[in-house]
Length: 411
Ligand code: SAH
Image (cartoon, helix red, strand yellow):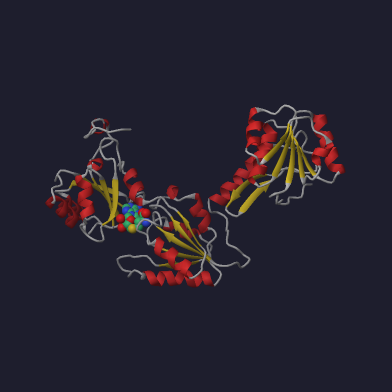
């Protein structure tokens, strides 16, 4: 039977005998873990010499001797000579140093677990029987997948200091939530959530995870930002892990910066898990590339909250794509201002409601017709508005796309 222990190899000497494929794989792994590696091989490959030239590996290019093991905490016998590996294992045993015998999983005193890292957790799998690296790796991968899918309750059971994690959950579709986002959610004692993004994930949380809804909705007055900040700090101060769950990316019109600031001011550790922003992903799903060589080489992302802003008109006149968030009610005003400043009334406009969800709807118009068309269609938030040539219906169809409007200056 094998006892699994986690070794802290940082700063400790590990001797790898044999710099072939297996020996180098182990060497790289031990280096990542901070070990001081001594590599012994009478005819090292170029790869081994290159790794050793970085200075964190000592290379002895000669046959191994018993004294090479002096001061080692762990030895790996990875030559292609079984007898030599057994001899090295014997020296290690005599010196009470753990030894991995790469040619025979049963006769060494140690095995290296197939492992994967998930935040502050490391999952390791070893075989109790003969070595079978593929089988062991398959189990490691399955466990890793399970953790990354957010299927495991990762809340801390020993009270630690509280913390806040801002998680961007993307535009709403399951496939657009990041692995890091799911993992963070699985650590939550409390979730403070908006109404946008992958909120359906919250239904899968364990019953005793407290979910606080601070989102805007037609019937629900938004909770003031200072109140949200207070909630985050209060829960984290009580030692809880608080996930602040947001649509898209936390820093794009998500007031994430203000929340981070409030936590820092209160001395609360705070992290951010970026998300897939609706500003780019929702147009992409609707067949709109926000830039296209020779057509639109820059893009402005703006909020419709403040109504018509000079930057929007200037960007349109310069041929940039403009992506507007929170702009359903101000779109008529924004289009009117652009027209007054000389933007072509034929410039295409696309509005995508509830992008990436089963209820997604795309409406098309031009700057000249947008106000009328969108009102007739009854467009409602949440919606992304794209203004610019890339928003033309069928833009990615061959004929339209093949004729750049302006010559590309470079690649
Ligand atoms: N931080 C978010 C944006 C928050 S502001 C992000 O990066 O995506 C809220 C606005 O985002 C909404 O008014 C709408 O304009 C846009 N939005 C978010 N999710 C959307 C979706 N699935 N479809 C269309 N628009 C969306």
